[in-house]
Length: 343
Image (cartoon, rainbow, N blue to C red; front, side, top):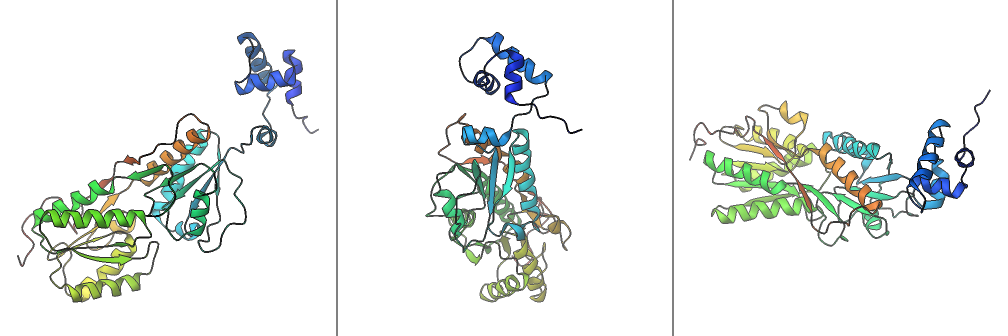
């Protein structure tokens, strides 16, 4: 036989209180004695009562669900970074007994309604993503996982410490003797790209070195296009002896371009990436890269958003910065053994 569902009225009857008092006791609200709260809690436990989430949502307006938005989210599951970020978000939502809803993410088609969630995490916000902008303007609590690009509405932001990691790479390359550094990364649509480029240019200016930069569209996975871009950069600046790139697809395009140009990575040209993946440990040579700890970042975004949703913390007005870690590999070793040949 089907087991009959225990209702709030059953709990109230067992505790000898009204249904409204039982509801307030279980939610920690209302005015009543501690003895009454204990009696209701004991009755709920003995009856194995489980609150009806739909009914709770109707009363409170909460659905106990967090939305996650990312540009072309379905395609991004091929990325180590995004899979780890989503796992971290799940770590945070599950600990607080919230569901996670992956939002539809076509960046060129506006949403026709506000999603039924309590708040939204926007991973890697991009300026011309119409849906990301709509979510920021929706009135829902929003936390961004990474820097907002210029012109986007404000919200609390949690980021990895890209500036410190990039400067560690550049300082180490300088110790190897580099004199012609170059950076290739996202354009102004990406707040992350804006920050990386600004830090690179500032570092070069501080040390009196010429700075070469190139732009890549955020999320562009085309190895062929990046190969052509690096070939063109090397043709313009043949003396380049350090390439810092923002992402794995650019590195995968750079390696054949460098080989075709007769450049020896880790020898007469040093190479580093501002994000890490398993692929970069298996290239020849393995590529020095920044571990952004995406799982920790995702969890921190979920935890902050839930605290904002539940009004236990005021939304922070300045970015929360989490550590990033450089993994030194043969493309740019941690300890220089000699100056790069040709200096």
